[in-house]
Amino acid sequence: MLPVVLSATFVQLLNVTVAQVAAPAIQAGLGAGPGAVQLVLAGYTLTYACLLIPAARLGDRYGYRRLFVTGTVVFTAGSVAGACAPDAASLITARLVQGAGSGLVAPQVLSLIQAATPATGRPRALGLYGATMAVASLAGPLLGGLVLSADLFGLGWRPVMLLTVPVALASLAGATALPRTRGTAGLRVDKLGALLVTVGAGALVLPLALGREAGWPWWTWAGFAVAVAALGHFVHSLPHRPDPLIHPAVLRDRSARRGTLLVFVFNTGVPSFTYLLFLHLQSAVGYSALAAALTSAPFAAAAVLGSRAAPALTRRHGPTVLSVASLTLAGMCLTLAPLIGSAAGRQAALPVLALGGAAFGAFTASVFTLVLAEVHGPAAGSVSGLLPTAQQLGGSIGVTAAGLAYYAPAADAGTAFRHAMLYQAAAFTVTALISLRLRERPGTEPVHVRPDSNLAGDRTAHVPHRRHKKLRR
Image 1 (spheres, rainbow, N blue to C red):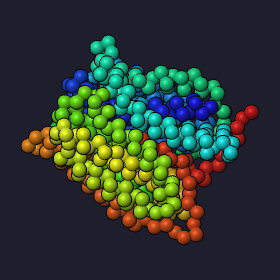
Image 2: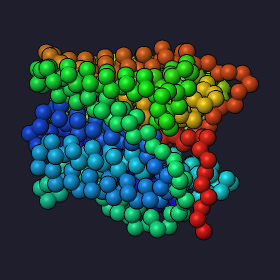
Image 3: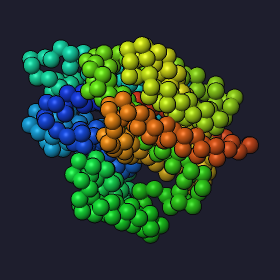
Image 4: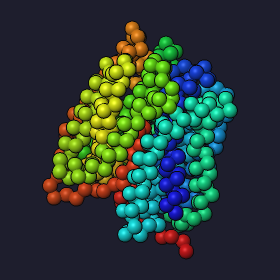
């Protein structure tokens, strides 16, 4: 079973970083504007985020294997459609479909591991799960760079969209090995809540991505108004809806609110950083996609080491790990800004990237456990599902906000990159300030989650209070 579910997880995360390294080639190949390319990246994580919690409920209702297969089919169809996209609008639509497929699959992977693996075998399974995240994060830019450099059949960026298809097809072929689970009859999904979150997040991301190029016309401000109305109605009506998407106790629990905000703000700086680095190295410095991927490799490799060291650091230093890691990332961004403009500076930037990668790995491997240790009662189950949603939404908004900083009026490309790094440093500094408010509570036992990280900031936690279904024999 494990090879099947882990291969699905691999393609979900690979799909984030290969698109980031291919963004300049996509923009040139389709004649698209920067905002459209940002939507290509942000659209995937947007639908991914909005479907995570509803998909977990659907898996409980209809069975994990059925949702796994459905999501993988949707993802594969989106990948093929993306490779064939004739224009930017078609590619953005395909990426939205891909994200929806990944959002359907991700909760089922963790549920299947939890339901079908004996308790004694779960540590090994979860160790392999974490290793899959690390390999996907490191392999994505390198594979994307190799394919783009090879320019297979003269197709440019299009084969990059097909990189995940063979693995996804293998997952489908192996799905018969997955255990069948009984659905829970009568379990309802909060359709209105899912719709409000999707509309609100989409109405926020769209004008952020396209507003600058369009001159901020009326529809961009209307979009912001729709976002406020939809998300406001979601929060206001939460206590009054049957089977709400998240438990209303989340709104009353200060630790839950603070922890969700912490994860959201941190991820407004994570995928946007790698996107900006790949974009600047290729479009301004003149690197090939492969050279840009190799330059970023120390960040990804050190992130693996940082994540391995995180449990020991967290036991010893607690939430201080989050503050130090965030400030280290802010320092990395400020240091990179002047270095990246010269060949000698780019060589000197490699150890700086490695230090930042280690900080990123330590933060992402620690934050869920530390946040959930602060949350108790009925809010805890909802927060463990809400945190990965906040991650993905933060990534979507961060890519568009970072694009605004990079493409703001500037004297030259170097100045534009410095503007963007100031945005990144600000996001990580605010994260550090929020993390200072986290405090361990003596005598409480942390709620353990299964870490799941990539450079785009992807981490899917299991809901600890879910009752596992019996396997059908």
